[in-house]
Image (cartoon, rainbow, N blue to C red):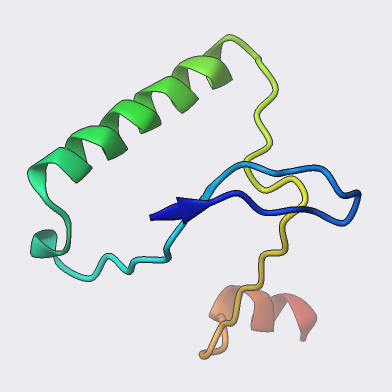
Length: 77
């Protein structure tokens, strides 16, 4: 299901799960929801203790916005 990747520096990075889209409640099983909520709790607890957490280190994230945002459009006028 997941595999380790080698980053640009040649060291192995964390395993990456296959991309899955969440569009409706039936897309995940009860076990997957339990894992998701437990993982969320762990991340939130680390945040509250001011521990560093960089899940996107050595990764690229792209966001595409298909519609104009009223808030940003007005700020540029």
